[in-house]
Image (tube, rainbow, N blue to C red; front, side):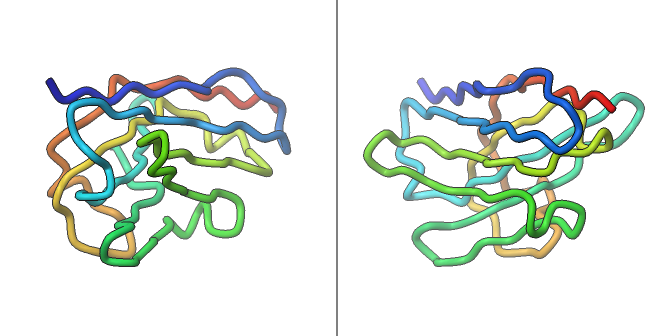
Length: 125
């Protein structure tokens, strides 16, 4: 059974940091493109960052460039999102996803077949 489980969300003050993790079971991340998305109340789901370890590309949304870093640990089959200098507008439910997506700068959601359940990130001002 394919399963993605996110962890690491929580409440942080403006300017603080959080590290989200997404552990996969039932498949190997290295064979897929992986991504983080977020959805705030009343807004559409948006791509935050995406990467393919095999094909060697990484993309970030303009709103998070220089603050967020996506990474993959093949030893633990885990994808992480390090989020620094958090802002209130970063508050959302964050989802990890995996699939056979192509490299696109804004990390659109198509091509991602497997999704986690989401983890809440709240940023206080």
